[in-house]
Length: 156
Image (tube, rainbow, N blue to C red; front, side, top):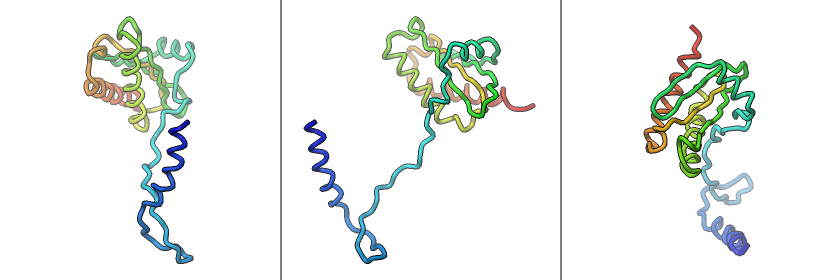
């Protein structure tokens, strides 16, 4: 709570330290507004596979792409957006820290490539190669899988 109070006190001072840079219609000088990044493409809850039946549908009828790190299964969803499901087994990957790191990397990669992907349901299974792979190897592997998904689902 003490930190919050200090921040509330410091915030007006920080704003007042900014130099004036323009004049509005009334002739008053105005301070610059901080540059905010463009809205990022978020990983929305609607883009997640949540139920066992959704995972089972993908496992039953899917196209596969595999390498040492991941097995990626895709199935046409009939929806309007791609959806992602993760299957990161403790037996394969190890403790929660390792599993969560891989899940974060997969989600972030999906978020960055979602605009390229067709409307499919995707399940990503981690394989033993992902356990000790560094982040760059995992990201390259996922990018290869996303390209494969696009090729597999492209109209012939």
